[in-house]
Length: 73
Image 1 (cartoon, helix red, strand yellow):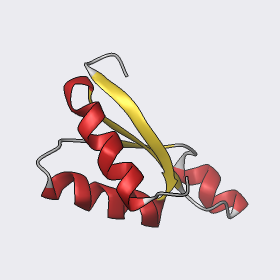
Image 2: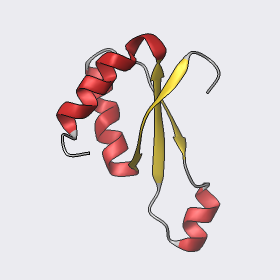
Image 3: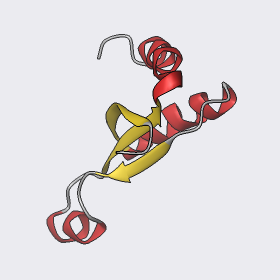
């Protein structure tokens, strides 16, 4: 992303939504982008995955939250 946002993580949709809630609760704006297009996921039955982007100036805080939520990743 070329708008001041940096990639934080790539997660299955369920986990991405959980991470999104934690980011929101901590006042961190984020954007998600599907890894596979919706059509491909429907056609192949792939589990949807999302890339989660956060503002560059919030990446350190977001990374800390990510590591708390998913310590074994």
